[in-house]
Length: 314
Picture 1 (cartoon, rainbow, N blue to C red):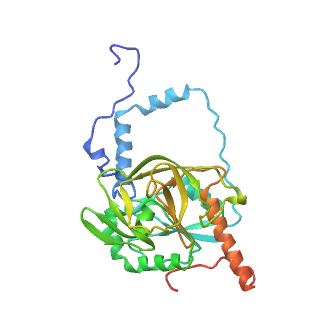
Picture 2: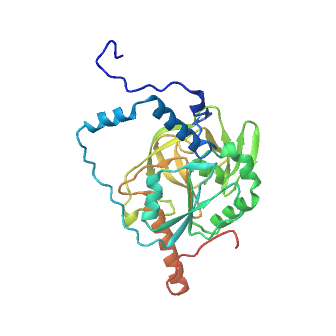
Picture 3: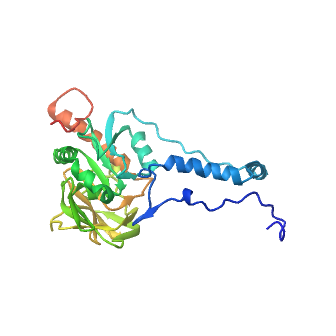
């Protein structure tokens, strides 16, 4: 390059199989499942440092004009008075940082749950099970009978819960992949089946049906909700009278027409909601949990206390 052009070469990074990120049926293996993820990142840094003139890179960078980036102020939380459990382990790790920050900004403390190893639920006001790969961990998930029973009992007892994609699969009755079927939580009366090709992939546009457990903040319902989906599974054997929170205007959802299964105070969908401005689901979720606690106290005529919490010991 330097021989034929006037562009200086600052370095080159040679191919190294040791730095490869493995992939499988749905793409790259995420860091929450890669045992050596931190070591791989450190090795990547060492490889670049050894083969690239970093001082020269920084010198070039300093010649660039200064860019002013607007700040991103976070809302002031009203005080972390709620505890929301979040399944965060090797099976479930797909979470947007902005969603978790929105939950915290709304006044929630996030309590991690290991779906393979925790034997019971901690004291919680709500539950969030995000995306992941339950199919690659379904034997371990099935083996944790106490936690599956605790989650089912809690949701059927009214615990507000939200699940996306992998979380929906985990909450279904069973999960089948490669000819093997494992029992899951069973709060959703349907069976998840893995396929060899995507059942839903791409951008999604949803319209609310008005049957979601939690209403829009301030009573304003958006015309449509932007979302996305990427799943190789389908949900089979759902009852004809299943209640859905969304009509699918674009995308597939659970059956090509609907998404967002509603059971008790659970909303579970294949879609990952991305309306991050006016109608963020996290704010609505937390507001519902808080209002539910207030209404319960008013019914009992009790003095103000945090919302009633549900766990495994009931």
